[in-house]
Image (tube, rainbow, N blue to C red; front, side, top):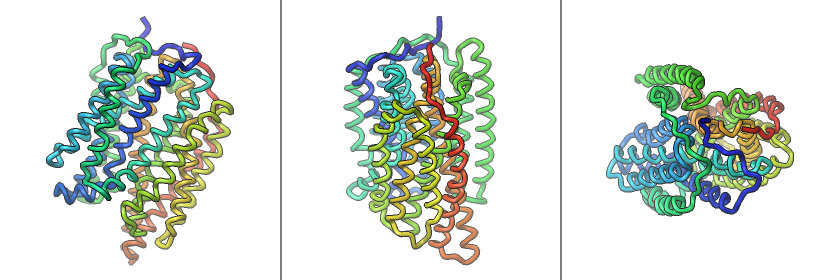
Length: 480
């Protein structure tokens, strides 16, 4: 019996299927929003809970670590359990984690709540992508994947804005109290109305693969999160290299194990997805673009608050237009993909992204805020032109039985690329700022110089993406 849950994609999208997709889109947006919502709240948490900034950062780092560990397993989960079971499990975990976080008496319980939240979040995006690939006709996938782009790109971008607005009016606990009733309503409605897609297959989970996945992806994300930290020279460097080495060895062993298990058609994450040239090219470009997006999301608030000395609320509002642009244009880009294919979108998108990064590389202590808004909006438009075509081209090039594994790989790439982009940009900022300060520059000028160099390196790295954009092709319908 073939170990596949996916049925061939439908020729039309029924009203029942549309209802399932919209429910999942709404739920996914809410859970992904929480990934970046804590960054702006760190000063409040430090004061309220009596913790250090380094400890507070763990509320985001632990979230990313949990996502990195769980996402590679979702390909197996989607095959083993029904759509409703996975959705209910994901939203239950997220709701429990949100409640624990909102009522946490101290930092340790809050950290546990964030980890439980992340466990539910990690299951939602691969489930959503796999469901769309199965339910939506081949010729209409771009339009629906455009809506996924809103979730994967806009939700993280809006996190700091939403957080800043809430914190200007209420305690950090309301970051969770406002989300909790929405999550519970979506859990109840989804549990009643979500229809199962395909049939689950009884396959045994390979425990060794789970352990290697946790060691590899978890170690890599943890190591990247330590790069550029403030505790330089205090042992964090050794810890970083140990984590990165363990992560690299874990991933290498995980890959070897999957090749072994593929012989009997029972891998935890089927790596035959990378036999598709279109999938490999698309996911490679996606990695670079995700790194650029997350690196920018971490640097711009630092620049606006530390260099231009703007408040968190104003910073959040200045970041908002870029997120709105991505959300507004994503459905249109999806329709254009269905009509014209990926290259007419990805090529100009890569050029626009590179142009925006080169513009950001000119920032100084005297740059006007409107320049930042214009550059961020431009960058967001370029990323929007790329994400939907790349998502759709990557998954559309796979056979139906590999959809769940491809979706899991895309989710894992988002986490690793986000951590890598953040680590790269912060490392350059920290190193250059220290050098400039040592040469006599004041703190503001030193930070402005570090941010400028970080964006310059990002701009240089964006140039190969333009060349790679010529290699992206329109996927063709792949039979099971």
